[in-house]
Amino acid sequence: MFKESEIFKEKLDIDVSIIINVHNQPLSLKLALRSLLNQDFRGFQEVIVADDGSSSNIFSELHQDFDKAGIPLKYVWQQDRGMRENVSFNNGIRLARGNYLLFLAGDMVPNLDLVKKHMETHIQPKLIVAGNRNWRGEINPVIFESLDYKPIRVVLHDLEYQWQTDEMSKRRELGENEKRKQWLHSKNPWRAAFACNLSVPNNPEVEFDESYVGWGNYDQELAYRLHANYDYHTIYREDIHAYHLESPDSVANVYRTKKHEDIVNYLRNTCYFFDKCPGLEIEEVFFGFARLQLDRDTDRWVVVEKPTNKLSTSQLEQKVREVRDWLSAHGVYSST
Image 1 (cartoon, rainbow, N blue to C red):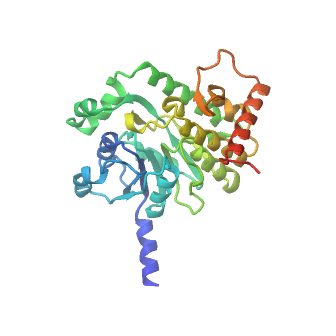
Image 2 (tube, rainbow, N blue to C red):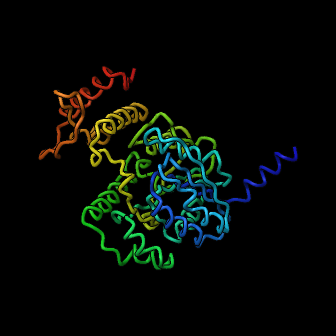
Image 3 (spheres, one colour):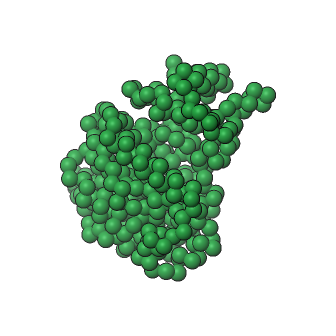
């Protein structure tokens, strides 16, 4: 009885557990930890680094940061069996003692008020609070060196106001932000919730589906499930800033990796997501399939140029049938 009460008290003493999912992102992670250890938030927090099979020994590189930390820091690693962010986040959830969970991707450097803004938004139970993703392009050792010697407040000020953001990153940020605001005011507001910058109460139902492997949809499925089964509501705040600094070794977007194996995982994940989330329109889930094509000679999937004209609903339905038939024939996925 004594042990149970002590565990319960320990959980209540921590307001928020911050879980960072990382894979071969030591530079952005180092900046993220510097920010998290200097947050404006006055409550008690802990940071959990959930490593999805990084090849480099990130923990040994950052052990001094852990040793100097004024708040609890934990590290959990899993084997590299392909991209499994969902499983990695769950590893962090199992270690978390906080009343709230705040998820960050390993390429996201949070602003100093990020934790405070997340926590002040949870004014009622069962809220999903989604923050913004501010795209800032690639980070490499040269760029990191130019940032690392500066105080973290100066680094974040530079990322917000002084950064020379490339045009592709600007388009990604603008397009993603506008789409999330549209979703927020649609019949599916949960679609605005991305796990790269997200907070939820630490309730038993908050657990990612571990069936997903590779890029795509695992965080959207969690948000759908919390809405549909547990009456959660989503809030999107574009003023909760985290700066996306991409590590070249951790790119997961299949339209950029263009690897057959990655594409197959994405095709499977997308069909699985659609089948688990009744009520979604085919156009809003499978739109990306227009750029994926089966090479009949090699029986491998490839990325092609974006079509000049948008596929009609019937054309998209035909593409989805082709994908499902291929996945089923190769024993990858079947909805039945």
